[in-house]
Amino acid sequence: MNDYRHACRYAASASLIGLIMLSIAWEAVLAPLRPGGSLLMLKALPLLIPLFGILRGKRYTYQWASMFVLFYFTEGVVRAWSDKGLSQALAGVEVALSVVFFIAAIYFARLTAPSRQQ
Image 1 (cartoon, rainbow, N blue to C red):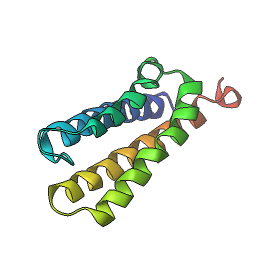
Image 2 (image 1 turned 90 degrees about the vertical axis):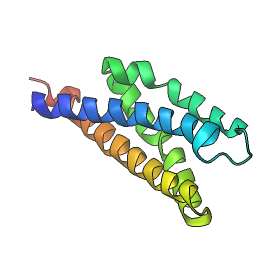
Image 3 (image 1 turned 180 degrees about the vertical axis):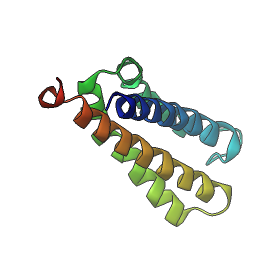
Image 4 (image 1 turned 90 degrees about the horizontal axis):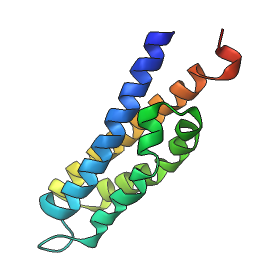
């Protein structure tokens, strides 16, 4: 069970860092809404709030961050549906990263529940 915890923790950390990097790169360089970059890259800032708790393996952070990341899932679905070209593909990556984070965070919280500790 300890291996599953480490795998979930690694997957959650990697996907959260990936979401942060994707948000910045997407709106600054890859496919900004306006040429030269967009202030929409600031959407990465809220992802920094749970970052240190996730990296440190804080169960409570995993619990609330799993709900928090659903905003990014929703944005990704909407933009995958409405955007075209590279932006649409990047939205698909955002959806995938948010799903990986959600699943990993839920399982990590479940595996570290006090009732499961021995």
